[in-house]
Image 1 (cartoon, rainbow, N blue to C red):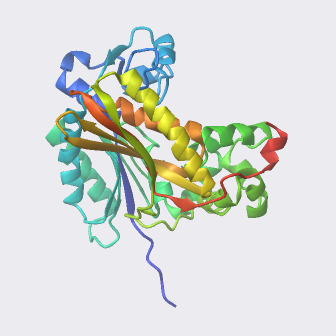
Image 2: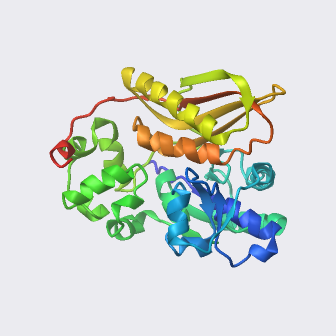
Length: 356
């Protein structure tokens, strides 16, 4: 009998990254509730310190809501150049461990360490100590045999966590989890599932793939069915389709007016999502492109955990990306694109239509 070796996957997630960098760089901020992001009426929280999180503040939240929840919070516009610099330091450490690395965003990554002779716990501890020594920052590391479980594990004991989910522990650990913890189920899907009495993974496991197709659409039914049973064959380093949908324009007058530029991005996103739906596709990555008055171009991206054609989710992600972009010079061109595209039903009728 041939024994198939279980993979050894790590998910490395920097703890409240932007906020933690600010607290290291400015020791007077340590222990205080700080929010990185715009404080204007249309501002969005990019991230916040754990001192702010205890008040219910979280990333992608409206800054106005965050102010109401935590009136004494300190708002910081942020320094993306500095965050990129620190991220580069950390990824140098990560990539020194193995070449099989999937960079998910500026502050998280998956590693496949299956071929290394060291134990995943040894590698995780080495990463944590090396990052702290080099930057003064803590990271949380999740260990398991697939990406879904490794990511779940990295969130288990934050901050500065180290947790492993073993195959024999999957049912016990997952069954009691609220379904919002299942990466692949968005807030709207969770709310709809809650309305029909599905609150935990154990509740969700009572349904067949066919049932889930009615609830979630065929695109996600089988994948969610497998994930909640600890099955996720996605390889580390998988980047999906390269095809993208986008829209950009050269401005008549160069500007640094963030509200005006964000307004354009929303207009463009409407067009791009319409293209996406027309072609019956789903996207996972949102990218904003900016060209400055001196013709220097920059792009910033964020990849969501799941594929979608939901405009509100894509808009939320776009706002998050834009909030992290420091516009230090006048902008002459701006655009947004959706990539990591897969085939999917653009309009899916489901049982949820009965409850909407």
